[in-house]
Length: 247
Length: 247
DNA sequence: CGCCACTTTGATCCATGTCAAATGCGGTGG
DNA sequence: CCACCGCATTTGACATGGATCAAAGTGGCG
Image (tube, rainbow over the protein chains, first blue to last red):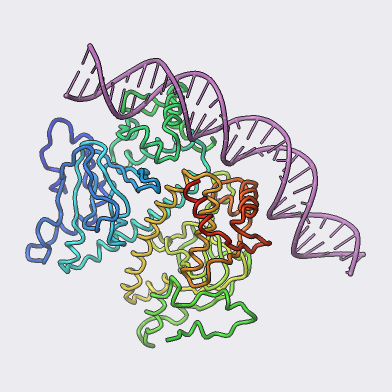
């Protein structure tokens, strides 16, 4: 069954890069609300679909009170935390299908700032208002526990490997993870849009931006990838995997 | 009100290093079960208090089916995940008051292996059996969401800083975090027992064990810490904090 | 067309990994 | 109680990956 958010009109080609609802991290909760009867006590406007976000716009700021979780329909975002020296460190990227801000639910405050890397669309679920409305949200809670548990496990592994890997390994693993995430969401994994700057990648991977640059050109020279402007094409996925693991 | 697990007898001095129930991460759930009436449907033996664990003993292995969460009463544990090259990477340490294995609840399987670093005591809550018994565990679930959410946030920050810090910064931050955790649990923060080997620390911090060694001796020479065998004393906490942040 | 931000490329230096040897410590057996 | 062995730790010497500094190239946008 098609869901309403997938039937909306769209301008020239934007939809090509949009994740289907069935592949979206927010979908389990969307479904609960889709079937909320009028008069069930769920206030209107709790779930907003496909809201446009312009490049550079900020969804929320670190330590702002938690109000909503977001799901990326199209485009991309970066998460940052303030540094001790007051510059920002990139701690993650969100791609179509990813859920944004769920950690904030547990703490009542968002734990990082999130900003659009390009023109994007998000679905917004105002969980705080839903909670206040007193409507039972068991299904939502259960989904949340699983999501958070997996995030913890994933993070452990990610940290454990990132910290011991050299620059090439990190970069290769990063490219592969972007590819994997795109293909999981049904957006094809060979063609990747590097919407973030070299500096963002560098900050995320704990490297200097010059190192990112050198790495990408080396990967290109050895035929692992092809790079034109922001668009990256995987040519030798197996080779990249070799680099990422064996060093 | 004193709780039962704090009244148990103990041999010579062991109790000095034991966390009080009121400071323990498992306590919210313990309380729920403490007041479970006979005939409430809670099977006996779901909650085991102060079980002894000998040095080197393994609580559970990665990918083993999830059965229970553990709380450290005394002693310490390390968590490891298998490496691509089949050696183990240390991904965390558990100190008195810490909760072990909760990530497994979401996934139905444990996500890492946990082994005792010294003779220890744990409280064991067999959540899987509790779930099977059909008894409502809303309070437990709510506690879990908060715990996991905080863990995610903490991990983000930890990863973000670890990856960009040099050896001295990492080591200083590590020592400070041990101290902080001990003092949060009411066990005093100046005197720390380094129950893990240099190799374990190195693996955890992503450094060579020689680097750990050199760092510790340098810290000692500059009067930041005093080190005798496994026992570490903080002499200049502020100095350490300087090293950890400013580099 | 020219400015500005971002990226690429080159040269140099330092932190830390690696290899090797010395030291210390606990356990075991005589 | 001492001698010996094995293992963890410490210390030293050296090599190198990546940070840093500097400068040139590139693209977007007014």
